[in-house]
Length: 220
Image (cartoon, one colour):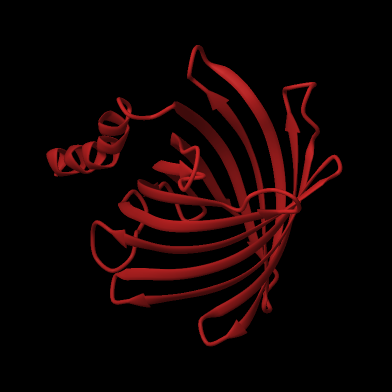
């Protein structure tokens, strides 16, 4: 059993080893996620995370906090609203406020959970307003049984496409692929490690980034 979990970890970390030779930067991004439900159709999620570059040396880029609210409309669907504030560690660049509207459809097929998410972001940075339309297909699968029980592991993967538009600017396209592993520590707490490979502005001056996302998830 131990060797099985070791192989699972290596499977998740393989993109980090494979793509490290062909990326422009490796980003380390730890986060804390707290979620809770109200007992009716509303649920909420708070996130704080920090982004760090390792291109030349380990350097903090920014810290951000976000709050999301979701409403269950039935038929495996939710509508959501979010707001985010990003503080950049660069005096030459303005801070960012972001508003998000989203629709999520998620459903389980035996042990496999599939989710579709469509998002519209409005990024406000100084006098600039950037719109981003995003679609993500994601899945999660427990490594034992039909659900990830306490002390058990699960796999997660996603594919996301982003279209970016801004006044007087050329439209841009991003493509993101991710693969990760998580562990359910107890009924309220889980840890997750996800490697994400990004092609940013892939139709023009492509920037290739590898993210190492380390998440702590706690449910109230």
